[in-house]
Image 1 (spheres, rainbow, N blue to C red):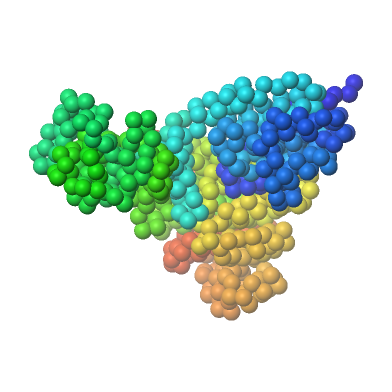
Image 2 (tube, rainbow, N blue to C red):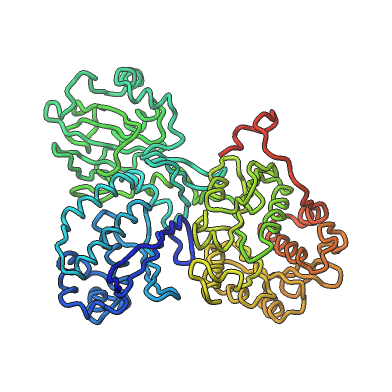
Length: 615
């Protein structure tokens, strides 16, 4: 019996960088059955029905690189999985999530495809995928489809799950390319972590972790805040007075950050706003900043009643009507008239001044083998250098060498827990192929990315991976996320790993047991760094200069390592430590003293374990 239908076989939520893109995506495995024999140009009326329901598909560029490209593909003939991708993206756009990444790729099984779409929130994207499936099938079968109801339902789901406008504008500004600050959503509402580990800051809508409970209490008590403002000589509106433009005065909203006025808007009766930032009289700006300082807030909105914001308040009987600890940013972002103000960027610059990225050193480690050992070694080097280090690897979850969880913790969830921990000053995170394929990386970028080596055949048979080039795409993800100022540590004896070197945005350090590999010679000829074995010495080299670090005989970890498996791990770890800028004498000491003996487990009754070490 033939089946002409689209069925979902599986969903993978890739919450971080993955083999498809840097952004979180939802990967759906779909089976189109006998529709494999039914491209769009063979179904009478299909293109017309689809475009009537979704006329904005005409803006999709697709492979032609211009508006109308996707409709052209529909007319020439394309398959349901590809159509599902574009319809899902357009439904997300209508739900309030414009743009986005999408791909549709065949697997080795006839009729089975991977449909990948950017996922701002998994629940929203999943709903859009299901709605897209129903819409495409209705167009194929020439059945009715309620587009209006679908649009409304998806919009409601998006509003429920996505961050509010205040939070979103700050996160967008933080993660923009020019700032590059990572973000982690900590709760189902608007609590967001910006930055990693000990360098992180937290926001909740337009409030930050600098907003004290005392200041909040003052701002929420009109009589208390009024008394404090009056004591400082500020003109205020009586708390009992009607605040809806008394005596015909205009209402203005001023946004103050860290003692500086950054935006101002005049509000009309309907809630609309007109930007007046450049018109605010200097004395009024000073009064607003003083009011915020008196209340004790770092980010605040100040309501001002005045006839003309360009004149001093005292000259027109103007007054401060309130100081708010959670100011609305939309009036400044989207005024009905006047210039929009980049208040999200202003808040980010306030929280992370002088170009601070909020990043700690993050080392990501992947490969077909040896990754857990390399992760443990790198962690030891970092610990000896004085950094409180979090480690998530195949042997457990560790905080400063104390095991807090056993078992395989080289996962997205456990790695994220390390990055959320305020005590962590450096993070070492192991990522196997299945993590990259099924979960995504926990970090957006890293300072050091290590690829120990690749055995393609070990990864065939899962996730529809069957070819060497597919395995290459998986592991290159670790190299793709190395920061421009970072380093990729690559195994020079593995040709597939060597091919990844040009993909790195930063520097490359090669490691190998064989000091005379042509790859090493070419790399060093261009001024590159390498770690290898020369005679009985472990050597660090920069261009033509070679510096012995220590004899192999002094590395007790290598005892009995006849197959050189452990030696490759040591070389990779030493290269990573060198990439991190750890002092050579520290690396030497770590290499001499490293032990893979079991470390003590976490004991919450231990009085010497600071509470702050938990996430």
